[in-house]
Length: 182
Image 1 (cartoon, rainbow, N blue to C red):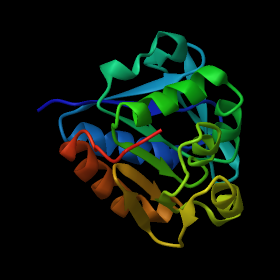
Image 2 (cartoon, rainbow, N blue to C red; image 1 turned 135 degrees about the horizontal axis):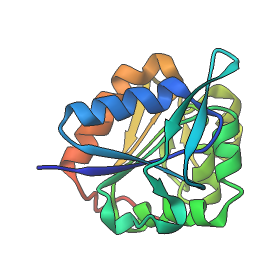
Image 3 (tube, rainbow, N blue to C red; image 1 turned 45 degrees about the vertical axis):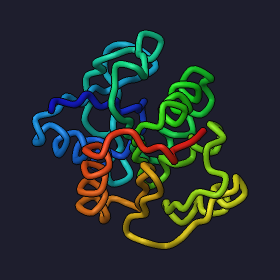
């Protein structure tokens, strides 16, 4: 069955954390839209420098969670910090939890989950520097390659992408997760 996946990102996303999941989703025969704050392109970050630009498929103010089966949140230091400042981005993220749909976040990506107020009692992992932010939001943080908690998939860094991609697809194939919550 064909799936539509939203990848929410803006300038400063870690290139591999968008490119690898997007390619893996498309290998499943699914559609993976890059959703961002503005039309045009967004610029990636790689090895401490600006890198390639990626085309935005859908502008956030025109994106609707109902059109998607799941959400992917790439990391990068800049990307999640810019997104969490935008109420529309936070509400978009929260809407996937309210609809009980799978959400996958890697590295610094889980930071926006703090603002979406969806972490209380959830098991997660992330890049180690945001561990305390997640714990302070009520999450149970662990240092693991990939953590899955009722449709929420999290990983620590680009080295975890193979495990992250596999679990992300597994959760998306399962569909609605009744225990996913906002």
